[in-house]
Amino acid sequence: MNPTLPASSMCVLVGPPGSGKSTFAAHYPDTWRVSLDFYRGLATDSEADQSGTPVAAEIQALLLDARLARGLNVLIDSTNVFAHIRAGLIARARYWQRPAVAVLFDVPLATAEAQNAGRDRVVPVDVVREHHQLMPGAAQLHQEGFATVHLFSELAAMSAALR
Ligand SMILES: Nc1ncnc2c1ncn2[C@@H]1O[C@H](COP(=O)(O)OP(=O)(O)OP(=O)(O)O)[C@@H](O)[C@H]1O
Ligand SMILES: [Mg+2]
Image 1 (cartoon, helix red, strand yellow):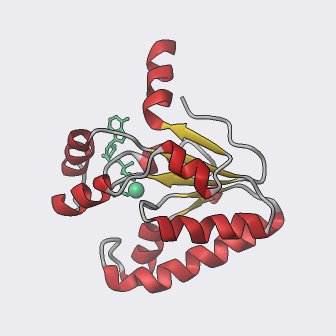
Image 2: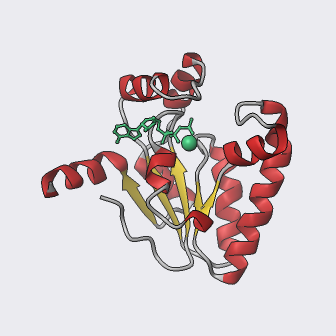
């Protein structure tokens, strides 16, 4: 079950490759989504080409500010497992005085690995493991400044109960 996101908010998806972030983001309007992978693809013709990360990060930052300035919703569909990356995002939401929401993709490592293996763009398994290990807890995300933290495991359980 996808939560209703507050108007004018910044929603940061946090989870390893294969954990279901882009699948979740697809339930919201396309224009809300900013994605490093997507911009890397636009810059280099390959979403996996890390040499495209600097330009992709610049595009993401520009769009984040443009939308937050206008009071439009933003969904950040990148792994966001590094605390310094989240700190940069939180700083932009604070600057524009917009609420920050996190969705933590707290899926077991085996699930992320299996979902990653079963799609077109397969990320190296050691990257999935490293990112999974780096995942913060909900308490840490609150401490960092996220007003609301949704756990994907709880959203999935709610969906299953409603089925
Ligand atoms: N809840 C789910 N149940 C079953 N399969 C799922 C679920 N969520 C995602 N998947 C499948 O898992 C694969 C990975 O999902 P997705 O691309 O959304 O991950 P991601 O977190 O965006 O990964 P990345 O960080 O590499 O972009 C896809 O093939 C998707 O269809
Ligand atoms: Mg994705």
